[in-house]
Length: 351
Image (cartoon, rainbow, N blue to C red):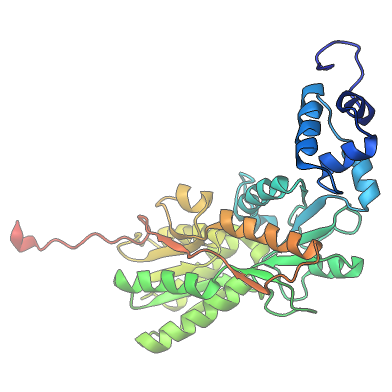
């Protein structure tokens, strides 16, 4: 019955399916699109015949009829030095892979907007809505979506902005607490914190968690911020300045993984060893953390599930559903590595 696979044959049309199934074109359309009142047995028979014929619906025509692009965007104002890296693999691309997979399940395409500071690209792209990854205050990507009147959700809450959009909570406070408690368990008594200088939730939450831990454990607050666009070099300079001002620092929590790699270099250049003299931990368990020397203790943020949840949240908004205002991401998990695991000191008297 199939008309595919023969050179010169035209692709089967909806009329071919209707003729083969002995029904109207309208019935075929309703059966294949899951609309209208079609007997379930007839619906299944039409689907089977369409598959045997090799019929493929005209998605462009469907989009025009429905007034939908059937596409959503993933956008962020995080500079590439933080979101990606030299390998073009990183936080943003991990989110993109999981989000694209979940969107495709719902027959939506994912449009990946490069993470640039201006947020450019959202003005003209044909989309129904967007997921904004870890927006900053007055985020340019959010501003462009609002200007177009497009619905959006965020992965990580927007600390301050023009409106409270639904979001997937990446548990920034808990992530920072996991890292700081780990350092304390490994013997840190003078830990320092390095965050981005902006107002992304991860930085704001980490600073609050650090202040609370410092008060609880009697630590002297030792903090620094660095511009995200500076990448590893910004982390290097921030860590070097902290070490110069506070030479007794024994641990560094560099929240951004690019900063952490720079911090490792600054510590090594200061003739200190990791982790014996200074431990280093970071937030995102990505390629940078795993390939750093030594490998960095980090946190599995469960980004695959968090990204999928963000897609479901956005598509719920597009369908007009009464969606949750906040969807908690799965519990984050600490991944200890050589950068903070201190071996027990052997007593020389035991031989």
